[in-house]
Length: 387
Image (cartoon, rainbow, N blue to C red):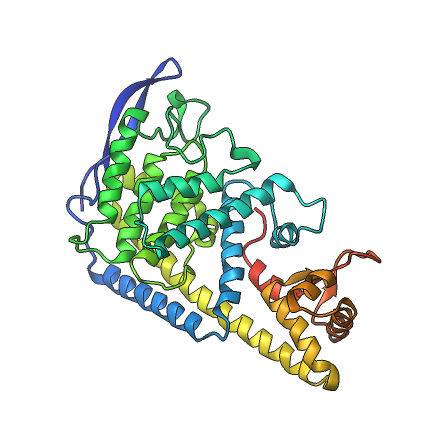
């Protein structure tokens, strides 16, 4: 299907030079993307996979544990795409607030990503609309502290930005000039709230993501907010009750194709090629999340069964084990505080878990020791290693 470019070039002045900025046409594309043939089957498979993910998380005994862990993996991967080098252990140590020496700027960015996501979801659950105001609020949290404080946190940009190159004049992509930005973002917001469109939530999320990345409304953090927008749309539209579908890992694993298809969509209007890629990503990611949930549940059941064999010590050891399931990296003082146990009791339970091989001490110190539920961390860490 031939559409031509999905926007138009507009000459403006930035940095004292004349540049050609790309101003996207309003969504939806004209004509609308065709969901037929193999694409329709892929679309149906992706929706069914989202349904399975929604069902499996509701059947887990403690879905909040899975949500806690999965959100942190997403935060790591999405931030790694932007160049951070934090690991999951770095983030867990940072959250423990007891361990100096964690790479502060990188891990702060990951922690801010979690704060931005949690703020967005909390606002949606309060009945606040999925809107530009909400995106700006999330952006403010994303860039709070760390390296983003000088990048107009919480506000749309008031100057020209660009992607690739050293200046707008030699850039790979120049988003709309500031004078066009408000109108482009207002049109995107109208699209998100248009209930008359013949699109599923998956298609709406796919189109909105490209449009947001094309507009690039912030001076920094556009990639991370653009990826969060996908999760927000799917949650807002009722596809998933819990925000558990994140495409950052898929985009990271296929980043060259991801960036190529963004260009193809802008330059040729080939929204179908982008949709094929996006729907395949949804299918792969949802199935992967279901598999991870099952693997974690099997791990927990297997390790709990071994603890039950401890006899009289089993009850307290299980309570501490539950503390590791909630946060797979912990100190004895942290576990004592969270379980309400006396420190010596918690210490004996940790020693029992260490003897079983369930947890391992990771500092090598004689005091202020930190223990890791390594098998749990290893499952979460798959694909989330720094680039």
